[in-house]
Image (cartoon, rainbow, N blue to C red; front, side, top):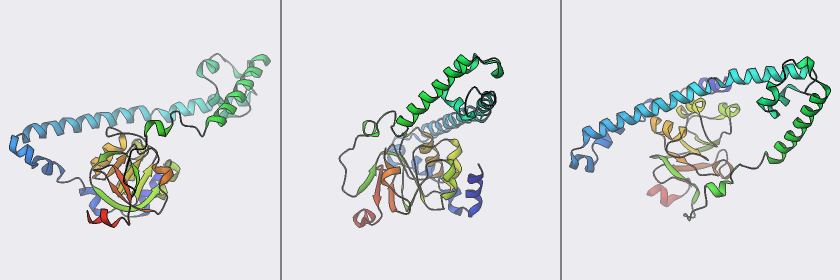
Length: 266
């Protein structure tokens, strides 16, 4: 949280940020197809319904995530008490135990030697398994996002998440501890986002996300802020690097090198 506040306070946001999305509805309502079919009112109602649904989605995320600090605090306290009683070596060992294993312990100070030995063995086994699998995704990105045939100048490609085109320097952000690194006008490149990432969109010129589609949090917020977004590219955080100048095309779902002159002219 402090890194997020520091990021927001570090520089004055671009004045154009607040008006990025203005005029989008008018542009849509004046589309030739909508004008020919005289469907402006129907489209207006459809957009309003979609906006309400998106707000509901964000509200459910907020209500779910605000319980996490309380839940985590309770788990950490259980770990602290078990560690104080000698049942586990460190309070963070609690994360390697399941709730049924912990719930059977009514008093940490009355755990039998046999139970303590079993808990210690369980923690060691699961810690070792976690370390062995920590670098392996549950599903290989090559399976989720198979490389499609693409132009030689495309650095990464994915699904169009929000339209438009922007040029800027890459800033790879893996988690909240790196929020303060993002500077105004940079291209935010990240694995995925949730509501706590939303303030970063005020600074970003565009968004490139490894995981997620058009209905994911990053795509929805990018459209709200009028930012080009490329979703589900699978490998943006590994292929792109900090300071690299790129073009993000949210209409086509591609990220190009900024020195691609033919693309710039197009």
